[in-house]
Image (cartoon, rainbow, N blue to C red; front, side, top):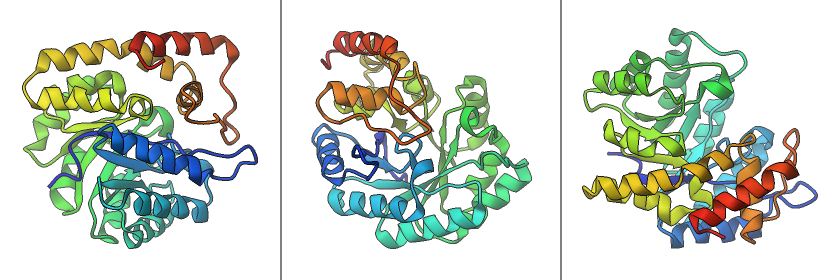
Length: 294
C-alpha cells in the first residue's frame, strides 16, 4: 500500500535569526498544511535544508513533526545520505520516532554505480520495516537512478515502494513505468510536471509549491484522480509562472521568501544559502499575485 496518494509537501525548516530551528513557526506551518488539505508531510528533505542540520537537529525536527501531526496525515522523513551508515542510522532513528516512511536521496558527491545504488538502498531499507521512497534528483546529486535499478529495488526489496522522480526527464519516466509492472509508486519531484507524471501512472507529488499553495496542489492531484483531467490541467498550467518563480534561484531560497511575503515566515536560511536577490523578488511577488496567493 502506498505511503500516501496526492500532494505531499516538502516542507521548509524555519530558522530564527540566530540560526536555531524555529519550532513555534514550524508548528504553525504544519497546521496550515493540514488545514489546507495536504496529503502528507515530507520533513527534512532538500527544501527542509537537511544538509545543514546536525544529526541531532535532524532527528529533533522529525520528532517534533511526528508529534505535532499526531497521525492526522502521514509523515515521511528525509533520511538519505551519501554515507550508507549515516542513512541507516537516520532511518532507524526516524522509524523509532514514529515516521510513516522515509525518503532516501541518491548518494551525492561520491556518487555510485547502479550496482552501488542497489546495495546502498537495499542496506538502508533492510534496516527498517517502514516503507522507503527513493529520491532521484541528479541535478543536485550528480547521480541518476536508472529505471531498471528502480524497478529491481521495488521488486526485490519488500519495503522499497516507489520513487520521487525529479530528473525532469519525461522519457526516463516513460521507460520506468513501462518496466514497472505495477511495482513502483511514482511521485513527481517537479511541480511543473505533476499532471504529466500522473498521466504516466503516478500517484502524487512531493512538492515545493505546496508550501505556499497546499490547497491548489492537492486539487491538481484530486481532480486528476476523480477523472477531471481538464480541471487538473488548468490548475497545472496556471501554476507554471509561480513554479518558475519558485526556482529562479536555488530551492528553498524563493519559497522561504514567498512564505515571508505571506507573513508566514522570516525567510532565514543557513549558509551557504543566502537571501534572495532583490532583483528577483518582484518576479516572485507578481507570480504569487497572479496565482491568487497575495
